[in-house]
Image (cartoon, rainbow, N blue to C red; front, top):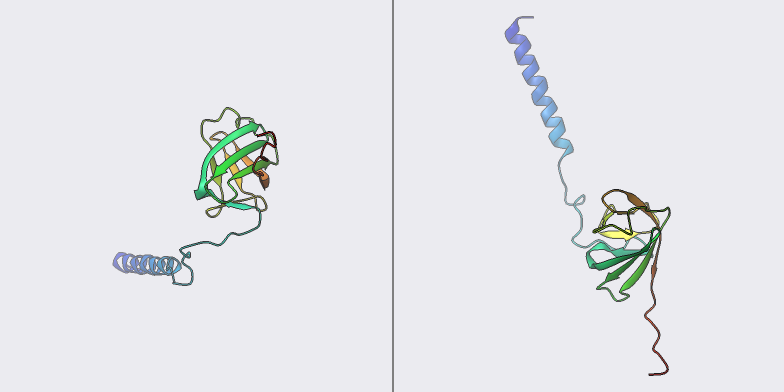
Length: 130
C-alpha cells in the first residue's frame, strides 16, 4: 500500500474514533442532573448545610448545620487517627448528601474515614431550676 494511501486510511480511522468518542460524551436532557437532588435516604444530611464540626474522639464527629435538626453525631466505622488533630475536614460522597448507608466518608487530608452512622443530636432539655 503506498504511503499516501496509508496516511489517508490512518486519518479516516482517527476521524472515526473521534466521532465514536464524541458520541459517548453527548449529554441529553434526561441524563443531566436535576437542579435539586432529593435526599437519598433517611440518615442523610445535606453537605451544603454544614456550618461547623468538632471531633469528640477518633470515632466521633459532631456537625452543626443550618437545617431544622441542626446538630448531628457522625460515628465512624473505624478509628480515624488524624480526626482529633485535623484543622479541616471534607467529605467523600457521590452527591451533595452525606449518608451512613453507602460508603460515604470523612476526609481529614491524611485519611478517608468511612461513616457508620449519622444521628440527630437532641436539643438540650430545658433546666427545670430556671
